Length: 581
Image (cartoon, rainbow, N blue to C red; front, side, top):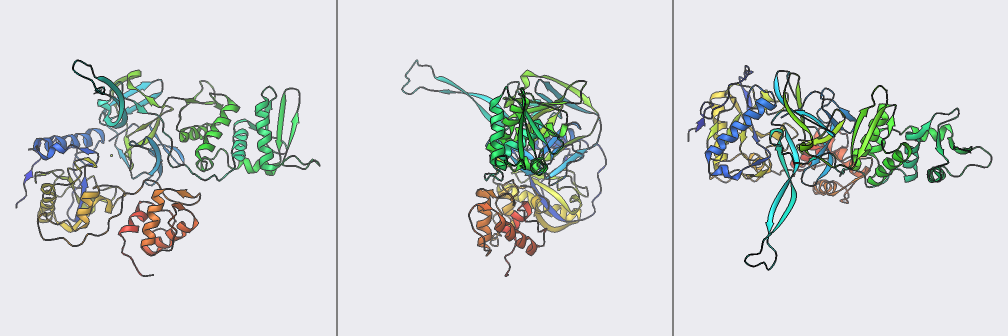
């Protein structure tokens, strides 16, 4: 069957804003999917496919700033990584960013898959400014929200004339900036699911670090902590923690710490060695990342006990570290510089959400660069003007065996990833990860029609690969990728060869040691490595043994032997051929 091509003029494509980069030949085609939810109704109505393709182009041109079909925030917006807050100029692919699992409501660290930066030009942007929020985004920028829903529930045994009970609640959904409702709830914080479960430090040590960090001062022999005798409970806590970590003061005066009191204050003076043990970890982010959930809460509570409910620091790094700890506990916080001073104040609030109805919303013309990171959860924690919140990344085949002309023949695509577009054309199937997930036969035929078309007329090579084969992503989704791995057979044709093994979705966090990481994702990887013949315990704990097995496996596969199970190592555990050792 000849290709049923829907030309750009037929789907009313907008003209590109610039000239395409020419593409003379490629190794083949990369198969993509739309991601997100695709309405199942497009199977029955081709006009729904046309509307979806037009919306994709509009998003890519207006939100991304691309010249054509191929989402974003302003230059001031930062992203939270395990190394602290970063601007888009500092952010790199592979950095671990705090993301939101919108289904569970928990935050987790995930690698940045791509950093998309689009050139400065006049754009219409939407500004939202409120008491606890500041954002400047494109109209199509995506947000995870909780939206109020009401439904009718009939009382048990209700007869005629009995009114039903109205039940109200919130459900999680994704919206764009221009479709945000005034009552929608944007999450400001979420408990982190990736915190250690085994304590590396004693609680007493964590508390001492917090006291010294929040209220310590330098002394002639070593650091010291001063507390008012008007708060004897604080004095007793510090004394007990020092005794637990360093033992009681030695009677001969040679001791890691000693206590000196006058009529108003008690000063706990530490020796140089004792002070070094505490100060070398504070206020480092690595120390905070090594704490359990309970220890993080202890650290925050101790810091607030020392400095008050709205703590102020002269050192911005110290304020940033405290804010980092607060966010990991699942509480919200904001940072601001006090007017006419070098001091920084962290406001810790009990708010978990922000509603646009409490803010001023306006449209304006923005002339700077816009940018957007891409993560597995399609979300990331952002900060702008000190306020923090979670925010939300060619040819196109549809289920009716029609192929939409995207950028067209001999034109560089924008979808395969930085530095990878020149190697393959991009063909998109109109399926997602929700709604329409299983590719209908008509869509598979359409993809193959597009592949043959770019081979015949665009000098494309013989390869048919999934987007994830060249880039760390879940695209083109499990069902479509499984079809690609089977050799992309024509539906209804001869029986395809046995399917090659396909890795389950990457769990979203890097498995590494130290400290020991535990979870079902660890157990899943260990079980697969044992099935491959590696001698590793399937106990769900990623410790020294698992790390060493990982390193040997990575060397066997010719990838960096860092002992960390990331997206590539995870995929190879299932998909790499098993070799005799």
